[in-house]
View 1: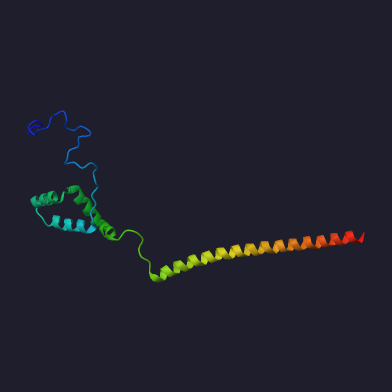
View 2 (view 1 turned 135 degrees about the horizontal axis):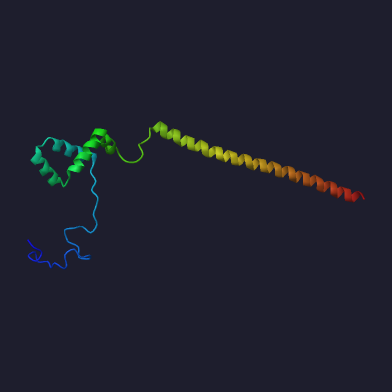
Length: 145
């Protein structure tokens, strides 16, 4: 069927700003779960040649995906992909241990700060004591004259 027979003018086909209603404005990358990949691989490998093509068309897949999924399965990557993303939950003992380590670190910092403050207070006290004795000696020395 020609472009003119479809009711479109040849000059308008493919112009920017005239998107086809069949093509989404922005392509979305498809992602597949490990379970889905394994199910498709099992089904695909149990079929004959013609049925394999039918499965691929039905699911909208390519043979390159099937080959890549086989490689992943053989490497054991699908088991890793099936794991929940993010950090693995900690054992309660390990969680308490980590919390206590953080608390000890924080308390050690506070202790170091307190020791520095006490040291400064001691030096200040000694300095004020010297100033007081020097001041007393100076005052008493002036009165004796």
